[in-house]
Amino acid sequence: QVQLVESGGGWVQPGGSLGLSCVTSGSISNIYAMGWYRQAPGKERELVARISSGGNRIYADSVKGRFTISRGNPRSTVYLRMNDMKPEDTAVYYCNADMQSTYGRSNYWGQGTQVTVSS
Image (tube, rainbow, N blue to C red; front, side, top):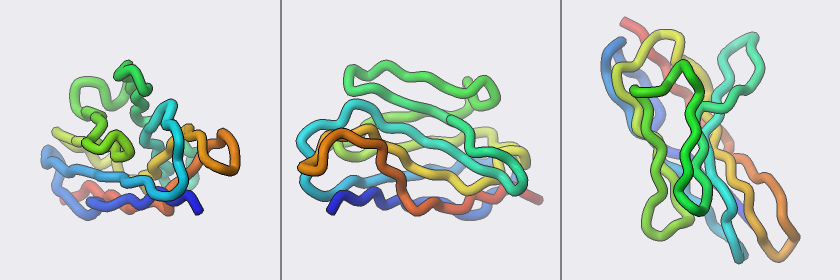
């Protein structure tokens, strides 16, 4: 069984920082890309940042210069460092991975972690 488990969400004041982590587990033979998405109340889920197996990164315009996505060691982990946070960053953040497992290639999602930015 393939799983993605996120950690690190919580509450922070505007201008503050938070870090998110995501660890994969299961019978995974290859990870093509990993990323973070978020969904605010009443809004659709949107891409925050994504990193390919080759290290190429893409960011949503709203987080460029403030958020940093990185892969860990082992490579089955991904992090999101969030700086200078704003109230509009409040959302449930989901880890996503495009992976090859014994079940085939598929997109996998974590359970989500709440991030709240308020004073």
